[in-house]
Image (cartoon, rainbow, N blue to C red):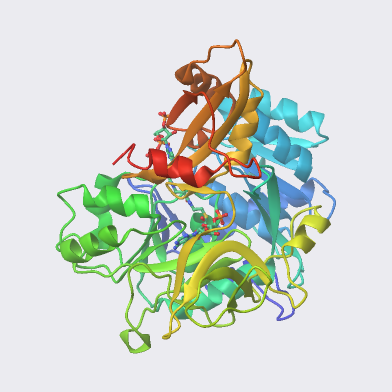
Length: 512
Ligand code: MCA
Ligand code: AMP
């Protein structure tokens, strides 16, 4: 395998980090199912040759909505190898959501689970997609079957640093999702910084229990292990008991706060279980100081909290080495090397140190913009090239960043982003509904969940549970508000704008 130095294809860098012993186990999926590094190389080569054989336009989007599996990772690696653009889609999305993504991204290839082939292929072919393959959780489906006839040798396509590697949809306050375009350099630069910053070392073993259709599991966790030539203990879904049982074989764990909350609820989580562990990382949503402290008391480990976005991958991190400072619960640490971060007031001017304002960032990890939305992209960057995160925070005298809120109307539930505007849109379209407001309220397990407050049209009678049941047919399950209240009126300010802060206050004790 020759990796010419001017090939910026992310795969080339990942492949160069494979250990010398290619027959060592790269992924241990449990129940005796393991994949060697050679398996990863050969299988992703075969899939890349399958893609090359389709004679696709350059930088074609490969849309993938499949259950988590090692083969899905191999498809991701194959997409990089063949120089195309990986577009992962949450398995919970229904047809309305999938219809939007496929219409917006116009993928040349769609890979879906066998169970969904009927409705996904219909949407795909109507949108002009030329190829639809299936991929089951158990290596079943047409994708693996077709690839099994392809060569297991493949030279990574020549790619420049700014060529696209992936598009990840992340909704905006308007409720319609935007495709964040991530380049090979965006991803590789961040992975290289994190490899050093988090002290990845020979012999590390990562527990991978996150979904691989979002940045945390697909890039931060996966690239972390691959770029260090580290074995992964692979969980197709998070089960606290199963994860705790295998912690003694591992050294690194990454999760959203809900995963930590659920492991703390397990008596099996104790100092013995974590005796081999080096590092616990949390992100994607705020880690409550109670969780941070409970984890410390129970395991002796201080969780390292970090902050990132789909548009930027990781932005800040608490320090790994004690010499660089302590890990402070409630903060997201320092801007990572290469990341410029500033806090500005509403006029865009930097605020005095310690004051609260909008967080803006700049760096090689910041995305290339939103897919086919140049105007929206332009709105989100300043004249001097800073990206407006939509997060509100402050930087203290020692340089620690604290996120205190969001200027974007966003609920983060169990680590997934839920956009009130999107849900309000669907509720408002329902018969008898005059208006609705969806707000986030604290939840012991998911951190924050949505609650819907609905106004009926004059003369109409609404049933909250019935509205939620209808919504469940239309939107991904994690987006469905956990409660729906039908009320006579919504609190409004003098401008007539719904005061969501008052609704949050009113319902904040709902799940206490
Ligand atoms: C599941 N449910 C949820 C959620 N997940 N409700 C609200 N929020 C959720 N996140 C509901 C389902 O609708 C269902 O309800 C019931 O819980 C059981 O569903 P199931 O799928 O079995 O749930 P689970 O297996 O318990 O999943 C919970 C989970 C999962 C493991 C916490 O949500 C998860 O893996 N979250 C990680 C998300 C992630 O990777 N975030 C990173 C984004 P019903 O039965 O009523 O339908 S990347 C990012 O944010 C940036 C870049 C960053 O910094 O990392
Ligand atoms: P996403 O749009 O899925 O990339 O989610 C990114 C958003 O998640 C950020 O803009 C933050 O609002 C939030 N986020 C990520 N990490 C953290 C964290 N450690 N603490 C608080 N919020 C976070």
